[in-house]
Structure formats: structure tokens, C-alpha cells
Amino acid sequence: MNRVAAILGTASVRLERFDHPPGHSHCDPERECAAGHAVSFVETGAFRVRTTGAWRPVAAGELFLTHPGLEFSCAHDEEQPTDCCLSISYDAQAIESLRGAGLAPPTALVEAPSNRRAYLHHALSRCGHGDEARVDALAGALQWTLGTPPSVTPLFPAHRLHWYADRVDRAVSLIEQHFADPLSLSTMARDAGMSVFHFARVFNELQGLPPHRYLTSVRLARARERLRAGASVTDTCFAVGFGSLSHFVTSYRRRFGVTPSATRMS
View 1 (cartoon, rainbow, N blue to C red):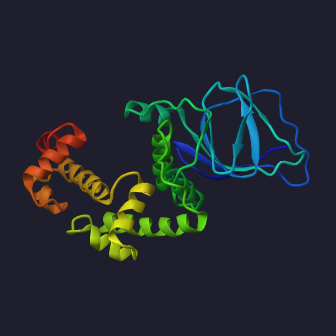
View 2 (cartoon, rainbow, N blue to C red):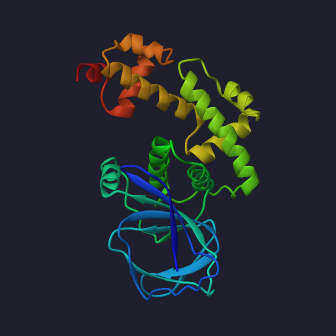
View 3 (spheres, helix red, strand yellow):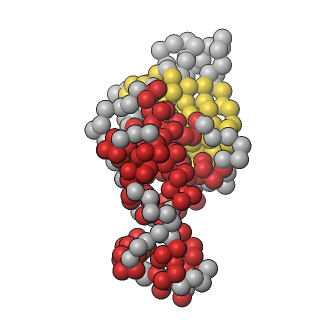
């Protein structure tokens, strides 16, 4: 017997927790067919899965992936399974949008844990009513981690990951709110209560890019908003925190494929 508890839903994704009610015997069907795109973080317990051929064990920390029409079998060794999953189901249009942005379809049925994926799981597990935009962003970020080799950095213990996640989230909030200020790596590290080198390494590990690149991406996104609203290129450059017009134009073209003036005129 399976139990699914809805946590949050948007037009693009559904966040649910999947487990088995205690005290109830469970019988695995011989074959299942996935209805859509989904990624499930295995939080506790274990099971086995296969499409054809040999069974593949799936343990806590790993990710189980499905796509529409996927036929697979699951098997549990216990009569009353203890596995619990946090699952993200994606609307077909959301996946198509990601594919249009260059996302390659994952090919694996099960993917290994990484600190980046563990961070996204931690963030998603803390979402609730009112976090719809955050869930969409986290679910999209999760898709971009699939199909790529995870970092070779050893996995952080759970308590350490949570401590790091809080510091990185604090740094992200600082960047989002004060992107126009002259934020230095040492300023962000000091605010997070970490050494510069350690902060840069942990931020990169959990966010998937270094702090300075994250700051630049935020500045460029805000710049595009201002340009589309009719602001001049020069005013926009300095308003979002760039100190050089040529650097701004080069960075903007590299990020969006067009010049700032082209965005302003579109």
C-alpha cells in the first residue's frame, strides 16, 4: 500500500511526499508505467528497481527518475516497507521549456547523491504554502543537475550540510537584496561567518557556481528588467552594480546573446 501526501503545487510542478502507512502489508505490482516526469529523493529506507535485466538497488540519498511511458518494476524486501521519498512531478510544458533552454534529457533511472542535490533536497523539504515561486526555481535547478557527473567532493554529513545551507542561503539573500552594492567575497564570507576560501568552496558546491558568478547573474537579470522598462544602458550599468560600461556590455552579450541596447529597443 502506498501513501502520497501533497505538499505544494504550481502550474509547473507538484511537490509530494511518498511513503507506506505503518502497519499495512505491501505488495509490489509486477509492472508499473510512469505517467510523467518526476524526480524522487529517497529519504529513508531502500528498494530495488529495474526496467529490464538486473535489479538496481536504490538507497537513501539517491534519486529515482521517471519519464512519461517508462515501464519499470519496484521490489521491497520487507512486507512493510520503510522507504520514504520527496517527489517532484513536472508538467510536460515545464520540461519542454527546460529542453528549449538546452537541458539534455537524463538517461539514468537512478542518480547518485551530491552536495548540490542534497542542498536542493534540503531546500525543497522546507517549502510550504507561499513558497510556490521558490519551489519552481528549485525544481528547475534540480533538473539541470541530472545527467551530469556529480562533484567528486565527499558528501557533507547531514548536520554540516544544514549548517552550510543556512550560510549559503544567507549569502544568496544578501546578494539578492544588495546586488548593486560593491559586494566582495570577503564581505560575503564574513557575513556568513566563514573564511574566504571555505565560503567560496562551499557556496560553489551547493549553488553550482562561484559567488562572484552568482552575483553577476543577479546583476544581469536585474539589468534586463531595467532595460525592458526603458532605462538607458549607462544608467542601468551603474544602477545594478557594474563599475565599467564595457564590462557590462560584454557580460550582458555573453549571458543573453544580444547587446543591452538591443534589449532596450525590443
